[in-house]
Length: 102
Image 1: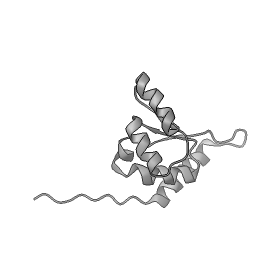
Image 2: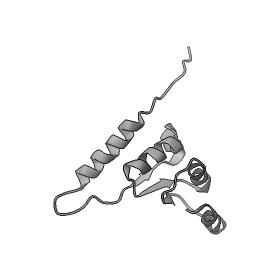
Image 3: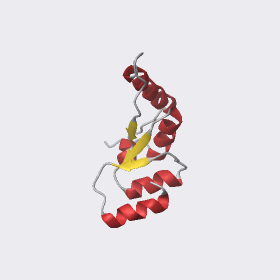
C-alpha cells in the first residue's frame, strides 16, 4: 500500500538550530563567523522560501541555492539577503542575475 509522506517543518526549530550553530562556532576571543545557509533543491524538500526567510531572520550572512531559478523563487518570496549559487553559472545567466539583485 502506498501512503502519503508528510514533512512538517518547525521553523522555530530551524532558527534555534541556526543560532545554536552560531553559538558553537563563536568563542570569547573571536566573533561568530558569517554562515552561508544552503537552501538549494527547495531546502532539500522542506520549502525553500519559508526556510530561507526563517534563516534570514535568524541572522544568516547569505543564502545559497543551485541556480538562478531557485534564487528568483526566493526573491519573489520576499527574501532580501545576499544569495549565492553553489553550481556553475553561465555568463548570460550571471549577467541576468544582476537584474534580480543576486
